[in-house]
View (tube, protein in one colour):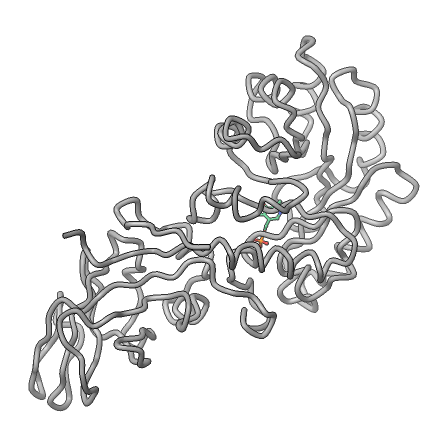
Length: 359
Ligand SMILES: *Cc1c(COP(=O)(O)O)cnc(C)c1O
């Protein structure tokens, strides 16, 4: 018998969330972001769930090739562009659009020899200070790119640092927007600005293409619960109780005896640990659903198990179902308790977890 731990991936929820993203973005087209193995949901599963997207966007050139080989014939965008000349040739051969965020990537295009032309997304750094050209160089970079035989169309993009917190005083979203608009005024080309946070909170930034990621999987970047935006969890991680302990006041649970009962308690042992992707740093109090009822984990998460407080809960035994996150237990709530974000939990789902597909 396999371990009872299962990640159920709901393709229907993925389709639904894509429809929400597109509907919020008005008439904009959507790059469904499928980097990091579809945020842990599986690359080809994401491809099927987002079959209705206008294009798929990701980071990894090898994964882009797998999408083509699996039959995706609509646009593909490499969000960090080519990492070397081989990638640029691969992009030309398979029709991947590439972000161009620096002079080194322009040089790759200047040096490319007849593999065919690529569509380019010229990336501007409007304040995040990660990748991208300074706004003052937008015109010059666009002109250089347009002159190259290796370049077909030039689109314009930037990435928001604080779309989940648009009034952030260090860098308000409006500042990034104004820098982008000023730098690109009068330039030809389609625009792509919005990630999930912008799509959810500032849909006026949608422009020609949105780039939703986390929302498509039923998580949010902050600024409201997934349910409040009508999003459905695409990944539900469930397991079962595999053991129970009745302990007295003063007894401790797990490694380091980090949790000490202050009264008699019943502890359920759940088959899920950090080697499955559950965050080891999730503290006592992190929410979990056991037997359909909300409770909390107690003590340290170990490699293959964690422990939950089921004191006073009737009908809990070996085999009782447990939901770690997903339907009935928002992943964002678990992430928040653990001091991280839903993105990290999804992406960290371990290979040993059995996956069941639905929808
Ligand atoms: C990952 C990524 C996105 C999607 O971000 P979400 O917050 O998951 O919506 C959009 N654009 C770029 C450039 C990205 O790298």
